[in-house]
Image: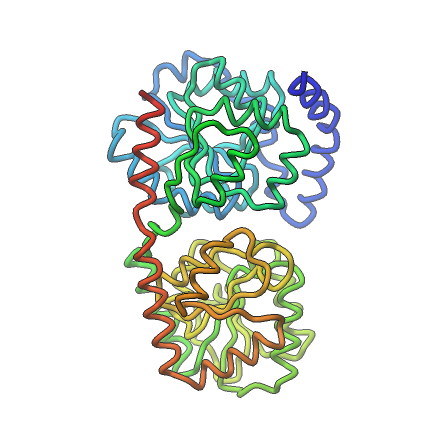
Length: 423
């Protein structure tokens, strides 16, 4: 009954979903593309075509973070299942674009349909996956039920569940319990995540760790980082990475307020590409001379702000920076991923909102790889102190590398969990 009522709710919201796509397309036209996939309508909607293809492993990665986290898992799956093709499903154009940048034509990618029973049945009938993997926190009741009926082992891997998300799922106890108990396996990032999943009704949860610790910077990214740093000359460089809406204005105001040394360069890399122009406008309005990464030019001595308007180069930006602030943590977004900065040996500054990486943030601060900041003014003061203290930066960078190394190994544990579920 709970899932029936849920399905009625999804059906009632479909017109709103279409309006939402149109609204988002005003700033990101990519939302107008591939609409058929969101309703499980495919160009060649015939099972015969799929049956002639190799067996399929399906990974669902809703957006950018989940897609990037899948890198080491995908590499491990290719070694264990070399004859299988890989299908990625996403919910956002930025997730899809990240998949294209990271994996190219090595994988197939589509949007996951909206969670109606008939759309999920068509999706599974069309692609016929032999196993499915959901990255992190996406629970779609009709999808899970359709997989159970079609005997497709579906696992939740690299699962994280904040207290806020747990409260939302707890508002629908029967629906959540049925979904969790229908999964073939659950691999949680931490003991806290596992405990919250069990409290919601999950029967068997294994703590496998965070796969994001297993992501390593590719040599070409590190080489690009050195190239980007060379373009900046001998200037100190600090990075505001994966910033979210509202944060850039606060950072720019605080940076302007202190009248910082004109030789210091602030690099801002917005989380979402549709906001590149907006952030550039914010810098212009405050009188900052700026350039863009896409210009592929040496950074002029007069340039105060460099806009990182590129995709798939975050490791390079971390490698080029003296200090990295992790976006999404200054305002209540829950923080973006700090693990990549730690792995690059870049000193980390992080704001008060860290629920998405709560355990990693606590450990990074405790071991000295990261320092907390209260607000934008505090952030700028910490930046200036660290830029003037080479020894502290070196110590923080070394602790970051050690911190990242200590937590590697989640991919192997996740692969073992998947193998058990398939058997």
